[in-house]
Image (tube, rainbow, N blue to C red; front, side, top):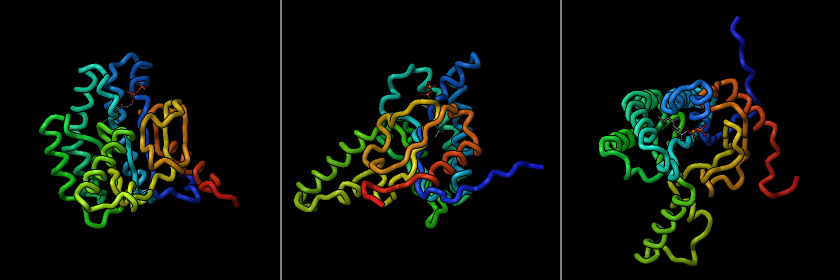
Length: 241
Ligand code: FPP
């Protein structure tokens, strides 16, 4: 008989995932890093559907950071090629499955065909999606805040916003994730226990789930372990019980 996974008592509404460990997964097998990314991309696709099926409403994945440009040209090309392939297939599948897709970060340095495909996908999102997927590309939490402050200052200069009225909600509204709930839980596999510039503002009260599993090995079982742990957390948001 097929083993059924037990469902956690609480499913987080909003989830962030730092997809880490592709390189180490490949190295352990004597494979090129690009193969780790290919396997990781497949796991990304499965995880999107697993989150949707479990009832997650917002999922943000860290696919490429502002720091990832420091990698070799060969590795960057491999990641861009996987992205290109996924834009054509998996992302279209997501839309067909009523998942809306948004890219967060500065996509301008990517090749023109990739940018056009991203814009095409974003232009026809489902009106009432089961889940919102954010893909962080050339994203950094600090860069996101700088981008938000620039937009805000421009609105102040144009007289559309007054500095005295700026509060936390105003800042929220200028982020790439405007209008979305903050992540309830941020999942980082591969043994590293840091945020690495991911959703710095939005992570103020997020729970963290760290584990040694490498991203290409991350399965539904691991996702359920993360959610089961999350269901047992006592979230106080700085207050007392
Ligand atoms: C981190 O592992 C992973 C990345 C920098 C790239 C993630 C890319 C994908 C999963 C594929 C493309 C994404 C989409 C959305 C189609 P690492 O290389 O830092 O691993 P390491 O720490 O073991 O070296």
